[in-house]
Amino acid sequence: MEGLNIKVTDKGDIKVVSCQGYIDTTTSSLLENKMAELIQGKKYKIIMDLGEVDYISSAGWGIFISEIKNIRKNKGDLKLVNMKQEVMEIFELLDFTNILEYYKSTDEAVKKFK
Image (cartoon, rainbow, N blue to C red; front, side, top):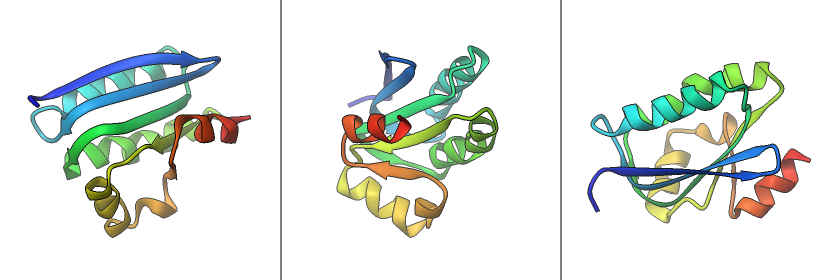
């Protein structure tokens, strides 16, 4: 799989961002631009579906961490779902479990917004 494909769908007032591929220094700008677009559009309830993501570099993790404060300041949140085992291991290794919420499914994350 080459690069990164991003698709945004709606679950009511929640935006589900589905990523496919890998998120590294060459593709992270695509994700950064998509996040900026959502935030500028005052969309602060975001679920990041990482089920089709094989790898996230520090550049990718940095996007989530840098945006979370602004999102929460606007009474929203960013929830991660469907991480593959390899991606989950890095997430836990970086100790982001204290900063970002992770759920096994999109439906589970949607319920946590209610």
